[in-house]
View (cartoon, rainbow, N blue to C red):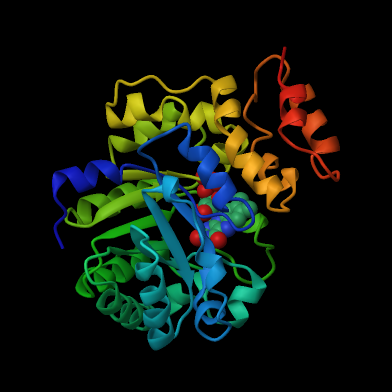
Amino acid sequence: MCLNSNAKLAYRFSIAPMMDWTDRHCRYFHRLMSRHALLYTEMVTAPALVRGGALHLLDYNPEEHPVAVQLGGSDPAELAAATGFCVERGYDEVNLNVGCPSDRVQSGAFGAVLMKSPDLVADCVSAMQEAAGDVPVTVKCRIGVDDQEAAEVLPEFLRKMQAAGIGRITVHARKAWLDGLSPKENRDIPPLDYPLVHEMKRVFPDIHLSINGGIASLDMVEAELAHMDGVMVGRAAYHQPYDILGDADQRIFSDARACLSREEVVFAMEDYIGRHVAAGGKLAQITKHMLGLFAGQPGARRWKRVLSEGAHKEGAGFALVQEALPR
Ligand SMILES: Cc1cc2nc3c(=O)[nH]c(=O)nc-3n(C[C@H](O)[C@H](O)[C@H](O)COP(=O)(O)O)c2cc1C
């Protein structure tokens, strides 16, 4: 599949899927800082949607577009059915998780363990594409797992994805070690191999390839874009959202419009927070994603402390957020 240049531009910069972190409140907040970055949901498993009927997991706010949903699963028919639900909900992309190493996910044959079964992944994405119609189906993978030889396994995997019609893939540039490391350790301990991922861009010029893993600043994003079609940022965007997203539209997407200031972002959350709290939600469910907004700025510590101590309390609302503001 060959993507046109406009589409390629929109896919240059994305925020990674992160369980418990990139929920819809987080995505709404991130969108206030960048109009263009592609935002991924947390992984939603196909069995939860198809067998469990948990369609509320697909709820999102219209303001989040462009937004991609990530699915977990390894049964082609079930993934196709789940993709159908996602497309009905209007997601801009459906992504398959071939990178997550958690135990729960291993036991269900989801995630990174599928790097060992590229033919099954090809069947999965073919079924998903059939169900998706015009909506792009993409893959997020590792460079390999356990004792696999990444330099052999990764090109083979990408070749099979390309043959199945996948035009866009994000590679987390490290292996997952499925035995003995926790999911958290698996995001830090296996070494990053950027040169291998850059080499894949040379070998597969027609696949839109994004790199992920350890990218901690917009300078690094720009440097990676010299090699790659796209860059995905995870933890840095969560912990320092303004540093990563605040200048992204100007620097990555050539959109000259100024970003809201940090304080303007806070006030832009007021109505959203008010509606959530009025509907019985807890302030902390939203503000936990906002703790890093003032990272590196005067007043950052107080902002975090006031919100961490008070936002879970009964009756806490936007007044607490105002009280927490650096002054
Ligand atoms: C809390 C947390 C949850 C994650 N959940 C997912 C997930 O649901 N699906 C997925 O593909 N990757 C998941 N990841 C991995 C990230 O998407 C990303 O690949 C990884 O953090 C490396 O990128 P980074 O160094 O920019 O954070 C998660 C990472 C974190 C920190």
